[in-house]
Length: 143
Image 1: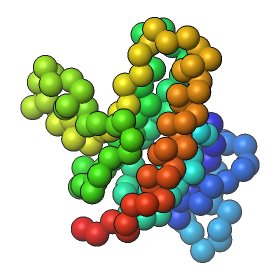
Image 2 (image 1 turned 90 degrees about the vertical axis):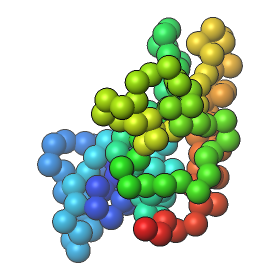
Image 3 (image 1 turned 120 degrees about the horizontal axis):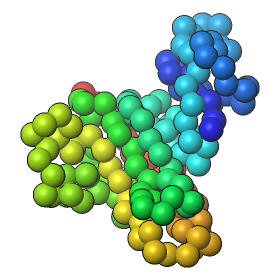
Image 4 (image 1 turned 90 degrees about the horizontal axis):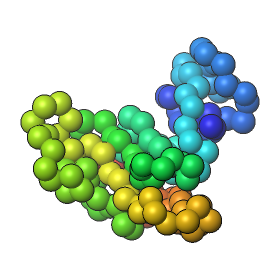
């Protein structure tokens, strides 16, 4: 896991411990852990105003699911989606989204769990790169 300030969204290379304050003395933020493969993208998205809640870059070793995702704060409306990502409510239309999360806060890329590990690694690395390029192209978020 990598570290990012929850206020200024700067990436930090220190080792995590609870209540680790941001190195920037003008910032009152604390460090949060973010998956390293998504860390640059998550930092950039937040700096641009697309506030994220949590994410996962996926895990090849998991046998039942290998879906990278990003969940955004309630008010965020994305102008477009990264390559091969979709909203949860489109991926799982049979879910009753009226109970809690409405499926519009989380974007996900579904990856076939039957693919061999080496190929999954390659897909996940390319997904992280696609996500970073997408974040770079997004305009600043306007409410």
